[in-house]
Length: 281
Image (cartoon, rainbow, N blue to C red; front, side, top):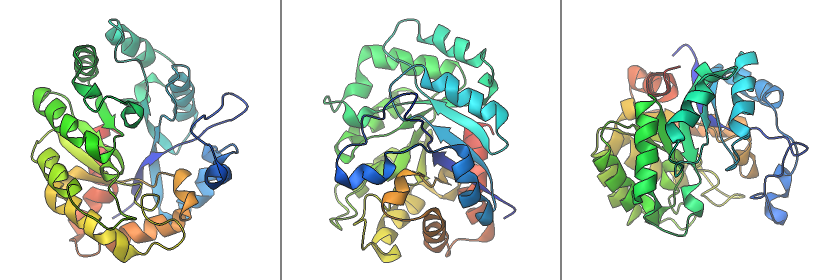
């Protein structure tokens, strides 16, 4: 394996806009600016050669900013941005993003479905129309959802076979509680669809922040690797959110331990090949 692609990280500048999800004392360590320059010294010692920068807020202006970062950065190779999927002109908006400086780096779209009170938000007619536009634009769709929203993900992926759905953070399983069901059954249902992919990311913040071990993460990683197969799993750090529970180095180390049983070619898929192929990096 010649290098890693970190398929999921964030940046933000609180002087540009607030990150209104960073609230409460536990989240206080994240209430500062995080830049690609901050990530570089964390990532480079682990042979991370490129990354995917993922949206943080449902604000249209953020995506052009991220595309500009990708255009001038040697580290960021792809951007998963945001646009309002419910607008009738979503196709035009995606084309406009592609025409911006750095627009060639647009790889996917994401919406904070986890914050939607409707567990079937993805199945709404206007959202389905938007997802179809994402597929028509040759982009993928990142799913940031909670466990109870996974059945809607399964239906959406089944109804839109032309669109690749990338599940962020394993669908946020209850690692701290140590339970597998019904998450595992729902994961297997999603993985049964060939147009789905899963990120091996976000596990440490679903575990007990101050006391997690790799053994705590292992059943969840094993379920995903078995269900999707290494060619449909990609590593992501979820930096800087991961730092609430672990430094960057510990996240990479845990991912290596959780995939140590795989063959060299399979590990290469998880740590680079899948992300390069799915996001067109």
